Structure formats: C-alpha cells, structure tokens
Amino acid sequence: MAPPQAALTQPNDVRTYPSPWVAWTGVAILFLVYASSFVDRQISSLLVGPIRADLAISDTGFSLLHGFAFSLFYVVLGAPIGKLVDRVDRRHVLCVGIATWSVFTCLCGRANSFAALFIARIGVGVGEATVAPATYSLLADYFPPERRGLPMGVFGAGVYVGIGAALIIGGALVQALVVMGPISMPLIGSVAPWQLAFLIAGAPGIPLCLFVLFICEPRRPSRASTAIAQAAPKGILMAHWRANGVAIFGHHGATACLAMALYAELAWAPEYFKRTHGLATGQSSMTIGLLVLLFGTAGVLAGGLVSDRLLARGIISARLIVLASAAFCAMPFTGLFAFTQSPMLAFTGFGGSIFCLAMLTICGPTGVQELNPPELRGVGAALFQFIVTLVGLGVGPTLVAVVSDGLSSNGTHLNLALGLTVPAMCFAAGVIALVVRTAYAAAAKRVAKA
Image (cartoon, rainbow, N blue to C red; front, side, top):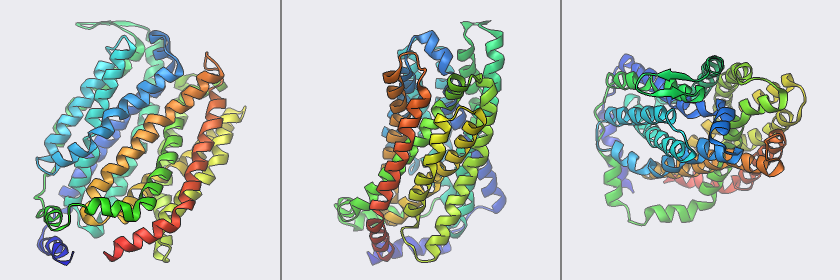
C-alpha cells in the first residue's frame, strides 16, 4: 500500500485551495441549499390532518408518503450520483438536483391521490440525493484536511436550521392558509391549503439554482483514489468488510436505530401536540421549530466536542460511547414527551430528546471516516447513507404509524405509539453501540495503522 499512499500525498503537498473568502462564500450557499432541502422534506409533517382527510388515508399511509417514498430512491441513487459528482461540474449536479426537488415539491401541491403524491415525494428524494455527495466533495476541495472541521460542522447544522425553519415558518404559513380555505389560481384551478403549502415551499428552489452557479468549482486534486483502486486487489472492499464487518455494521446499525427515533419524533411531533394536547399546528410548530433549531444544533456541537476529547485521551471507541450515552439519555426524555399530560413538560421532553438524538449527526459520519481507509471512504459513506436513511427515515415514522393504527383506527393513541416505539429504538441503539465498541476500537486501530 505504500506506493498508492505516496501517490495520494505527494500531489496534495503542492496543491492550492481557494481563498478563505471564496471558500466560505461557497459554504454559506451550500448551507442554504442543505437547509432548503430539509424545508421541502419536512413540510409534510405539518400537513398530516389535511392530507389524511383529503386523500382518505391512515397514519400508516401518511408515513409512507413522508418517509418511505422519499427515502426509496434517495438511498438507491446515492452511489451513482457520487460517481457522477467525481466526473462532472458539481455545480451542475446541484442545480439539476435543486430544480428536481423543487419541481416535484410543487407537484406535491397538484397531487389529488395517494399514488400521485407518492410519486411526487419520490421525485423530491431523487433531487435531494444530489446534495450530500456534491457538497462533501466541494468542501474537501475548499479546505485542507486540518481546516475542514468547522465548515463541516456549519454545513451539518443546516439539518436543524432547515427543519426548524420548516416548522417555524411553515407552521405560520399553514395556519394562515387554513383560515383562507381553498383558493382558485390562474392556470391551476382550485387548490386546497395543504396543496398551496407545497407550492409555496417548492418555489424558492428555482432562484436558489442561480446562487449555486456563483460558487467556486475548484480544481480537483489528482485522482489518487483511482491510483489506489488500480493498485489494490479487486477484493479489497470485501476483505475490509470481512475483517471489520462487526464494527462497521454495528456502528451503522446503532446510528440507524437512533435515526429511527429522531425521524419518528420529527415526523409526528406537530400532529402529536394536536391530538394529545389540543394545540393547533400553527400554535405548536413555532415552539417545536425553535427547540429543533436550538437543541439540535447544540446536540451536534456537544457530541463532536465530547467525542473529540475522549478520543484525545486515547479512547478509540469514543464515537460509539457518545452514541450509546446519547441513546440511553434520550430514553427518559422520549418517555416524558409521549406520556405527560402537560404541554410544557411535553415540550421539555421533546427538546431534551432532540439534543441527545442530534449527536448521531456527528458521531455517525465521523465513525465512517475512522472505520474506512481513504480509498474506501466513498463507498463506505454510500453504505452508511443507504442503511441510515432507509432504516431511519423509511422505517422510523412508519413503525410509529403502524402501531398507532393498530391501537386505534382514528389515531387517538399516537402518544402511546410514540411512547412504545421511540424509547425502544433508543434502547436498541445503545445496546448495539455498547456490544460492538470493542470491535470498533480494534477496527479503527487497524485502519489507522494501514
């Protein structure tokens, strides 16, 4: 492996990066893109009641629209889009992706059947599948390795800024639209309030495409990964998975279980406060959004800070230890959120659980870096995204819905469904993380010495 490593490091010793102003301008625009993607992804959580009523579907039917339809092609296209990003102008990939998810979000606003809305949500997922590969590739070319931590953290915070914005602004918008009732639009005809919400959410994506064209497309480094792939045996990937499979799939499984809990709470929180505590969506969404914005961002930063300090002390499985701690600490908060009769305590439980669950956003990706050598990090990241998104977003909200429908056909036991499933997801994540932490430490040592 020595010659490939030399091929990797020598060009990087002399390569140049964009100026800080150019690089941080790119980070700011990419942050807006990421946050915008989560607005379009999350807006449906505010529209559970109207969509269920107009399309005559159950909680399970809605969860398939919100999570499974979105994640279906999002995960399948991750690897092909990653390969495309390595070959063409990344700004163009992002422009096509933004235009795609924006158009399909608007098409959600024209859907009048379950099938039509399901297909439109698939289109949203296809478009948003371009964001992570293109952005991670650009950030790696904007900053040298020792300076990538802060921009990656800023970009990662876009998740919670986007979700918070969707809940805060979207909640106020939905409340205003409900008061207005159905309206007639030129060339479109009669539009229900929930359909108009999708149309409004999708519209800003078109001008956002133009902003992306102004970011820097930096010169790419020499294709060290290609050199490594040519020099390495064809079975290197399978050999790596055989040697470190327990650590890799244990880490991904623990993160996926915690992602199930996070996505389940985010998907059902507005409807939970409506059904259990009698708070209108417009009333609760402002508080929910602020809690996600503040506690989600704080959780990401805290998880990174604590795990970095543990790692500096020689605790190699620090990421998994923090992940397990976050999972077990989240359990009482999720229980309080689901079972309390007090709206204030429910908000407290929700905020505390989001703080803990958000730590997966930093412990997951950093674990991928520690468990895969440089030449396998691309495919390793694709595998991680596939598992976590499919299980977390595809299964998490739907599992809550299936239990809710099983307990009551009219959705009156949503709180009980959340209380039974979300703490169990957290418990599973914590147990898996603790069980595989020794294997994780051994695998990380092997990768570091390779």
